Amino acid sequence: MRSSVLVIGHPEPDKLTLGADTAPDHSTALSLLRDNPYQVVAFALPPGEEQESLGFVEDLVRLAPEAQKVLVCPSKSGAEVLKVLKKTSLCQVVSDFLEPEFEGGLKLAMEDYALSQQGLDLFRLFHDQNAKLRSLQENLEQRVLKRQQYLSRTKSKLEKTRRQMEALHAALLGIQGASSLSDLERALSESLGSYLQLAWARILFNSQSSLPEQISSQQLKEKIYEVPLSNAVQELGKIYYARPAEAEDFTRDEKEFLQQLSEAITLAIERLIQMDQAESLKLQWEATFNAISAPLCLVDRSFKILRSNLALSKALSQPDKALLGQSILKLIFPQITDAEIGRLSPRFRLRRQDELSQRTYDISCQPLNENSLSDSVSIFICRDLTEQLALERQVLESTKMAELGTIGSSIAHELNNPIGGMLNFLQLIKMSLTDKDPLREDIEAMEKAAHRCRDIVHNLLGFARHHDLTEAQTFSVQDLIHQALKIIEIKARYQDVVFELDLPPDPILVYGQPQLLTQAVKNILSNAVEAVTEASPSSPKVIIRLRSHKDSHELTISDNGPGISEENLPRIFNPLFTTKNPNLHPGLGLTVAYKIISEHQGKLEILSQTGVGVTAKITLKRPDSTSTPQVFDGKI
Image (cartoon, rainbow, N blue to C red; front, side, top):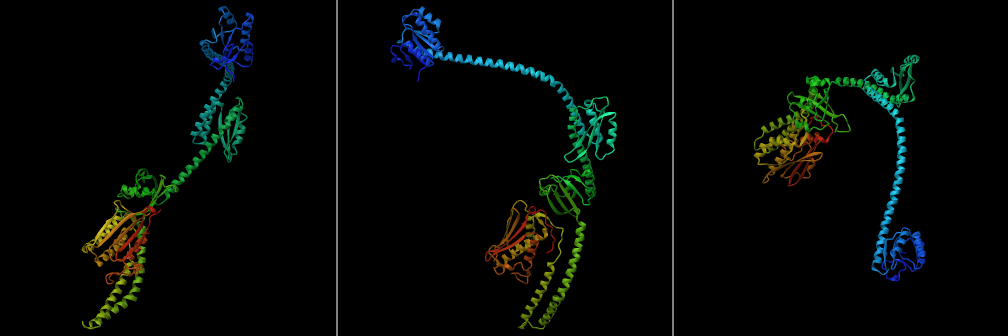
């Protein structure tokens, strides 16, 4: 690899520490200079004639014009150095190759070469940038000239476009604000009159067959241009623009402008048609809404009235405007609380009795959007069922009384008469027997059995008794439990029975007939109390526990009595079966409870372990787990 420094004529080249190339004489040096671009050249003037020395310098300048020159001049005079300087510039002048300053001079020459190259590069860069700037200036001047020519040509176009946009803006505002076809024609004539020199504008539908002939007759007096009005389906008609006869014809740009405007006019016409249809549908809807005989209204999420029909206004004796913003539930049921309203979901149906007026209502609320319960508008319907339920009760009572009369007469004929005869004969026989007669005990047993049969018949008749159908409501299970405990509290306290209650602090709500469910719970509690008292444990105890799950509520009643045997457990819900004293218990307690809970869409399970006790588990559905509340017929 060649060095960037060339030393010519050094007497001891091995002593150089810079790694420079060396040449023993000037001819060798010239050969190296032809093949390699050196940055620094150190040389001494060749011995001989002055002309030869200057010729070498000229060759050196020719072959390495940019190289930095270091002159070694041991014995030359200053005049000789000046002659060299006239041929080329010198970086350093030293007296001897072996002086320490020689290599320092080479280093300085290398630094000067680097600086000169940087300056040269900067000069070239400046020159190139200057040339580019001149080119850009010339290009910019040409573009500015073209731009000025373009601006001058487009200035008139912009002015025309501005006038066109102002006319378009005014026309669109007029089209948007038009409420009828005549308003639309007038708006077009006024907004486009100054821009297009219009005399008038008229819209004709295809069904108006005679009017196009009138337009044709006007063409003799005025210049008319027609534009079709079409939507994606069909052509609705045409719009005609007229100019005075002395005006110029419609230009191509003006025709294109009017054709583009026809789209907005078509949309405006369709909007007017839809507005007419919507107004007609609105009138039909209002007529239908007010024709419904049942009181109904549209409510928001908080059940405030947004719109009501005439039936609701008549029922509440208030005008429509006075009802707006009021709570429909508080208008119908003044005693209802905000907490009760807050528990109602957007979709519900229930029967409710007004405690003040003693009237029963069938209430339903349904969001208008079936796919989303979050819709803020619902339709609220309220029907007064008081007369209907009264009539139903009368019909049902009449039917049941007729059925019970038939059953009663049949039972009286089939059972009561024979049982009465047997009792009479048994009493006569017992009267004829002495107290020590061996048959007296058998006769008394037969008499008790006959009384037992008579009680069974009476209990079966009571099993078909009527219950009020209008008592279904939402109520707290905790209140139901406390009510049932009050019924058997005296009997349980007398027999030292302890009740342990494990009830949640928050109300657990169910929907049904509280009196019937209270009877069912009371029957189960009575069985539990009798079980622990008859078994006589050291500490008779009944545990009542209530839990709420995702879709249901669970009530368990557990006692520490003797339990029910495995053979009797499958028979506990059978009528007339009892494990208690048959003379005191007819065996219908659990059967009645089972039927009441079943008709409330619940479930009653009896779990027993002999010697440990009995657990009755009652499962009732949550009111919000079904789409519509249950309506019970009350038949037990």
